[in-house]
Length: 150
Image (cartoon, rainbow, N blue to C red):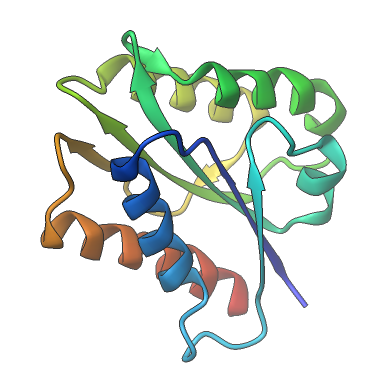
């Protein structure tokens, strides 16, 4: 059974709402045969990444960059997963107070280095996520999971 690994740093209510919407989409009843595994960025390991077939990443934009927790995750898994995970699909979402540009650039840079394939457009939200933003998060989770189910 394919596995979708959701790696997230969820320090705020806004990030939590986005995370819950992503998980809900990934675990939608109409998507069968995909195991969804959730890991906080500070506890996710290279073994988690190697055991998964696709990835969803979530982070706040802190001081113009991805969270230190997500950066730590990438630092821990980069070399152990570099050759084995090339070509695997991923998606991501980012929440920021006013600007997420640096976080997007950082995530794109690392995932390009890993050779991962972006399978959906990133969801970015500044300020409080509204209903439309949460629907985009749900769709992100559903899209990545459904791609693994095929």
